Image (cartoon, rainbow, N blue to C red; front, top):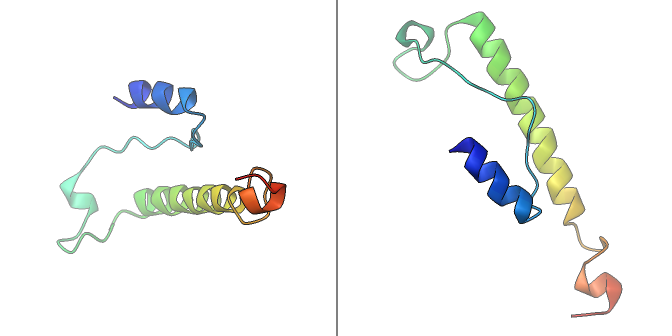
Amino acid sequence: MQSSMRSVLSFLDAPQLNAPEAYITFKPDDFADDGECTDPSTADFLRHYMEEYSGFVQRVLAVNAPGHIGDAEATGHP
């Protein structure tokens, strides 16, 4: 599914976070009943992944910020 979705997103020129990739095997002992990660190495990995994801979202939003090339107001074209 991921491979197919990447092809579609690439065709649409949509931003993608291609790295780091996250493939996580669910191990019930790694998570508490409330969903908190109890395994330090898994928690570190997830923290790093979310930091990268946050940076990706900020970059995508900055590209779409008002005044960016392609913005109708900046170019004067609708």
